[in-house]
Image (tube, rainbow, N blue to C red; front, top):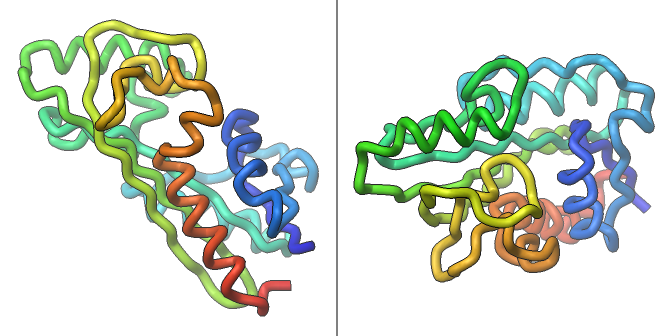
Amino acid sequence: MLSLVFATNNSHKLQEVRQILADVAKVVSLAEIGCHEDVPETGLTLEANALQKAQFVATKYGVHCFADDTGLEVEALDMRPGVFSARYAGDDKKSEKNIEKLLQELQPYENKKARFRTVIALVSNRGNYLFEGVINGHIIAEKRGSSGFGYDPVFIPEHHTQSFAEMSENEKNAISHRAMAVKKLLQFLQDVDEIK
């Protein structure tokens, strides 16, 4: 079976992605290849960040690698925090602080429309490929639910009444931005046979 390194240390993401790709690839973590350093992430777009991370790992460790970058894009805030979602309230990447800052900045606005966008970059012997997943929704004023991570407690996807944090892992995986991007990666891997 094809072995692919997923350039992340986030156990939630790893679990989510392993579940979706289980039939076509063995998804290997950074820790499993002995990569314990900070993977560079200095791009100004989700695409640039995902590609930078995947290329760094693929080049340094000689592996097929994919990486993702995800941003919450809020309409009233000119699509911020976007690429800076994880560090929105500081470099310590604390979800609580990020949510507080978001809700504070959004308070004066009636428009609460937002979307999560994930870009996955695959670096392989066939070349580099990008896969995108987007889910629209809106931000709520108070956190709801205890599942998920990041901005999940304040984001309700379109056509739903629960926040991402109120959904089970399976419910969220069925509709999430990351799941959409990973399913596009899955489709690609099923359609090609040159990646070995």
